[in-house]
Amino acid sequence: MTSFKPVRKAVFPVAGLGTRFLPATKAVPKEMLTVVDKPVIQYAVEEARAAGIEHFIFVTGRNKSVIEDHFDIQVELEQTLRERGKAEALATLAEFLPGPGQTSFTRQQEPLGLGHAVWCARELVGDEPFALLLPDMVMQDVDGCLSSMVRLYERTGGNIIATEEVAWEETHKYGVVETGEAVDGGFQITGMVEKPPAGTAPSNLFINGRYILQPEIFAILSEHQKGAGGEIQITDAMARLMQIQKFYGYRFTGRTFDCGSKEGFVKANVAFAMWQPELADALRPEFEALIEQAE
Ligand code: UTP
Image (cartoon, rainbow, N blue to C red; front, side, top):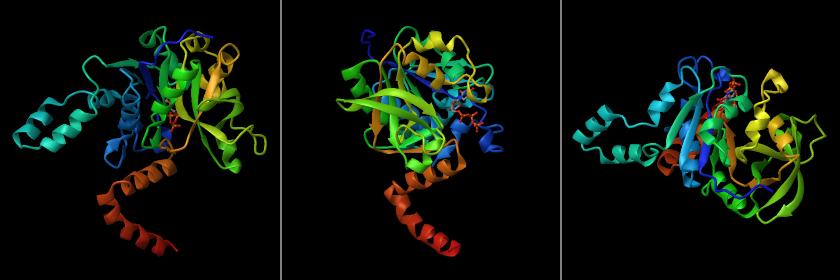
């Protein structure tokens, strides 16, 4: 059992190439594509802030500096808004901005895999537990997935993985957990399998892109073992860490949209638009007409 330390830092790996979204992602990072009126990355940062995270660590790559600009003040823009009396727009900008000194940026020089991206954050995280949020996975939930995970972590310690129910016939597309004994607000994880062949999944709970991990993961990642697709995978490192530390699952009951895929990205845009009453009213007849036309 590792000694309990609070989760203060979050890592956001944003160094991927986003090839599934070309040509959109040739010059614009996929994390800056917008779901209605916010870039994808902002949803994850807001979720982390709501969970009490104090330091936001971005693992970026070439052509990603616009992400750094997004989380900084924009002097000329703010000056213009002030002169024009646009108080609401100014407040919107101020609302999501982490404070001075609360962000760090490091580079993954080559996209060698998610595990490698996380390892690049090792010096910035140091010897303490951290949250890992895959920004592509955008969550629709009032309370926030990471907040609930932090509450579970405060009871259990160890490592936490968020999971979400999926239809059994879809399990072969995801990383799936094997469930053990129930604990207050979650369950023990006894194993994990990446994309299990149809009919072999140990559960229908997939890993949805939010983790709380202990710093011992870095020693495992430092071995740079390659896994599926020749990439250094975080799932492989977690499976090894599970041999020496406890892992618990949190069952998320909101909805996750995989904005790294076109289908998930479009669904997220529709869902988040329909969540805003003024947009929903305008869009509903439009959607109904489009569906009728398609039938
Ligand atoms: P993906 O598996 O979606 O890869 O990464 P990708 O390269 O971004 O996208 P495609 O498949 O080419 O379209 C999941 C998350 O891990 C990050 C990505 O930025 C994304 O947030 N990642 C992935 C890295 O930071 N570095 C890597 O080497 C790989």
